[in-house]
Image 1: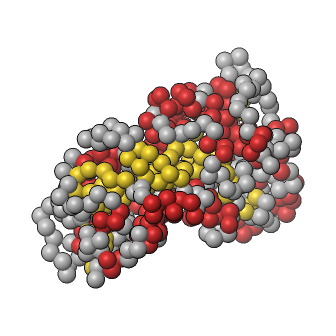
Image 2: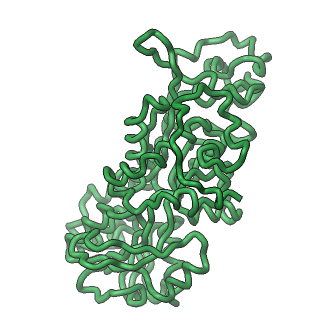
Image 3: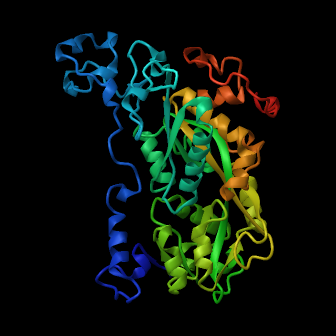
Length: 443
């Protein structure tokens, strides 16, 4: 019977002996993970624009529906007649976004654009600026890297759209979903299975809308060379880390093991440790293998391979059956030489990384994020290895089970009225280059 533990390699509580290799730093780092967001998520209040938040006498609160909400920052919340963070029935107070960017007049749904921050041009004319924040994952992970690269491309093309962009770190997919439920997200990265489960109502994400699919997230095993593991079926009797309770990786592990007729009791030891400690587990011989469903190449995997380890695919007939049974899974191939000493291509499976947006998010911002990524994907694949697996057609066709956000719907031209919101905005860069015809998908 497997020994199931939630400790860092079974050695971070008094009842277990602590090997010298597990330093106080590691213990403290693990302890901090229990704190709120542990510096992985942005926990501060939204950034306010002081120039636009002028004080107003509290006696005017009774006429709030006719006055700009942005001007009520100094009024005690209990004196307000409406919740200024509610938009169309959903709480919306996105992190790292100026207050004036997302607060609206209560009687004017088009007013989101009216109070965007302005900048001064060389000729003395003012022009609006907009703000985008993308929640991702830990700073050592692929999601944060991808979000940062999207924002870098937005910076390169800033004069076309004037959208400032910043990546925000989080604790991963589960954290991103929770943050969206709290109204703190504009855009975030999840997995295509999260997208599908939300659309089916299995794990609802109120207000979540599709934007596009990004890179492949392929499942790979990293195994010690002396483990004898050549496939998923060889995991019986081995020491495995399947990730913390409630994590996306743990759910994927349980589904994969079940498909191969394995339970946790069939493993020698089951660890529930954060993925950040996988390299330590391999290098110090605490575990025989760990698995990641992630974009490739990934530094977390390459680092572990330096400790007499190798990568093994999760493909096989039983995996093929699982892919056929789930719309959000796809068969995938890892090209040869993606990782050290990996001379041959590896067959596996996985899903797409899904960029989603919160429904109240400014459609102008979502439109330009969608457009800039799609129009520049060739360059992004050259500059950023994480985008190497992106297939242009798949960005619209695969993994987008939720309805499209109206900003993305406008770019993808999903229906005749998808761009109706644009009448409230100044037209920027109106000469839109042609893009592939997806008409067969828009039904």
